[in-house]
Image 1 (spheres, chains in turn brown, green):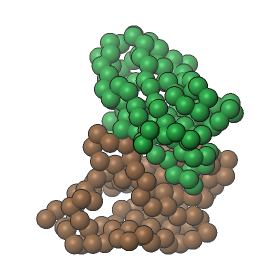
Image 2 (cartoon, each protein chain N blue to C red):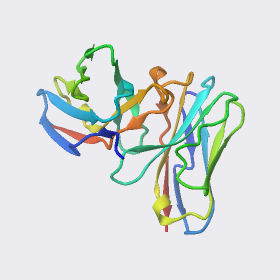
Image 3 (spheres, rainbow over the protein chains, first blue to last red):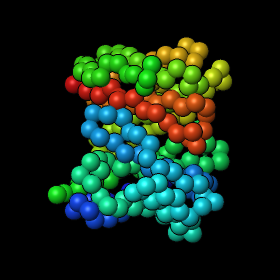
Image 4 (tube, chains in turn yellow, cyan):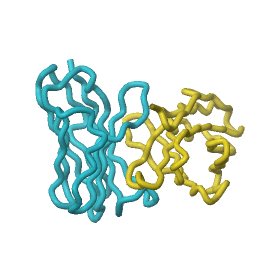
Amino acid sequence: DQQVKQNSPSLSVQEGRISILNCDYTNSMFDYFLWYKKYPAEGPTFLISISSIKDKNEDGRFTVFLNKSAKHLSLHIVPSQPGDSAVYFCAASGAGTASKLTFGTGTRLQVTL
Amino acid sequence: GAGVSQSPSNKVTEKGKDVELRCDPISGHTALYWYRQRLGQGLEFLIYFQGNSAPDKSGLPSDRFSAERTGESVSTLTIQRTQQEDSAVYLCASSLAGGSNYGYTFGSGTRLTVV
C-alpha cells in the first residue's frame, strides 16, 4: 500500500527552466510534508518542508505547494541548475506517526545544459 | 561526529549468512531510525529508537531482522539467515528528538548484496 506516490520516475529539464516534481498521498492523517534530495552513494538530505496549515513554503529557488483537498504537493525549482540533478523524495508524517516518515519512490531529475 | 556514520559501506554476503550493520548517530541526537531502499522502490521504514523508550519495530519485515541501540549512541541492525530479497541499501538517520519536524540527518547507507 503506497501511501505516498511519485508517479514520475524521471524528469529532464533544461538549465534555467523550472522543474516541477509532483507527489500524491492517500492518508488524510498526514499533516507534515518534506522533500529530500539524494545524490548517488550519499544519504538523502533534507530540502524543504511544509505543514498542512500552509499551502506554500518558499526557500530560495525552492518552493513547495500543498493542495490538501487534492492530497497533492509539488516542488518547484526555479531556475534549475545542473547541480540540482539528483533523486528527489517526497515524504509525509502525521498524527500517530509523527516519528516516522513515509517516503515516495523518488523522481530522478536531470538538469541539462 | 559531524554526521551519521554507517559501516560497512558495502557488504556482499552469501544467502543464509548473518550480517550486522552499524550506525553511529550524530552526538546528542536522541532519535535514531533505520530505513531501507530496495531497487526501484522508496525508502521503507524499519525501526525507530527514541531515548530510553521501547523501540517502534513495526516496520521490521520478519523476525530475521532485529536492531539494538546502546543508550543514545551506536545502533546495530542484524539480519539473520539472509535472503536475496534482503538486498538493499540500508539507511540510518538520526534527529534531535522524535518527530519528523526536526528533520532527519541520514548516513550514506550500507549497500547489502545477498548472493
